[in-house]
Image (cartoon, rainbow, N blue to C red):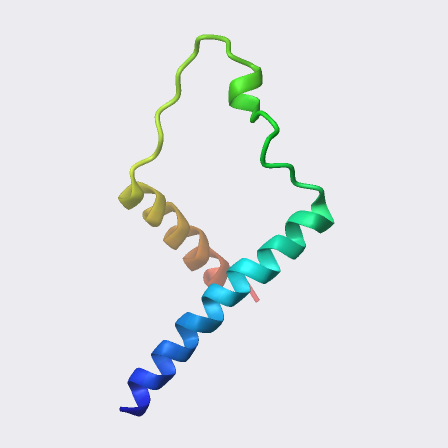
Length: 72
């Protein structure tokens, strides 16, 4: 029972942090959601392909693993 309570509390804290800390960061950095992204502003007719999640996860994992293997 206590494990479920800890998981629920962690999820609630994560959601609250996402909402409040994210909005605070947006105000600090001056992020305007109505602004056009560079992909929209510079429409040169060249398409891009979004990375597949499995490939992206592999790149993230290898980057983190490389940091741990860095010479000390």
